[in-house]
Image (cartoon, rainbow, N blue to C red):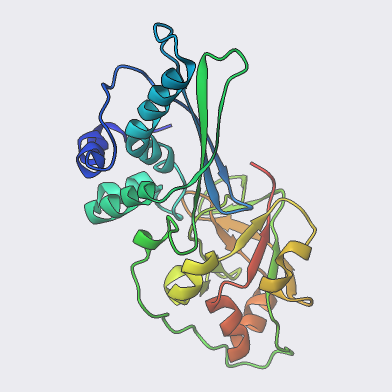
Length: 287
């Protein structure tokens, strides 16, 4: 895993030193990180040892939690930076070229995303869990949006039998031919992705999506299950269903779909709408 922490330690502490008390940074915070693509959440479980020289358990716990709180900005950024942004970048690689985005991402820590705190069974550590959502009013995605209105999509002008669909389901489990590379690979989840037809004509990219929909729930939902029920409000009861034909891009995030499906989506303005609004479900293997 690439380490992006060092260039941002001073930045993080400068941004947040006024937000928290400043006990000495003499204790390492251990962190377990999970990217929950099904829920669209970055999950961090941080732990810090209690000072054995402090006999008062409540005070020792309080000071250990303060250690976590103080180091949270740096720990958060270091946990977020390896997340795949798109076909070309991780979040960390992107913010190296965009300092403003780094500053805005750091502000996400100011929102109270603590979900629980408890002592370990041996009473030696305090454990604090944080859930940072990718989407929503305080979503991580907000500083990463670079457009204010959706770009137009190509209209397919030939005849294709089609009807209006409320959503799109792409079955992308297993391995697929990797366009531009040798061999096969799996579709990898990302905050942004592209869809192409089998001739590599572009069907969808982030700039074609309504920024309001991207803020609300992103370009697509990812699921490891075939059960579409939790996603009915997004894709409707009778979505257009298709299978991936290939994978594209350096990070393996972009999906090749059949030409027929691409034409069905691009032939009708109503189907353009489902793409713009992110009414897409992608079923993938669990990482």
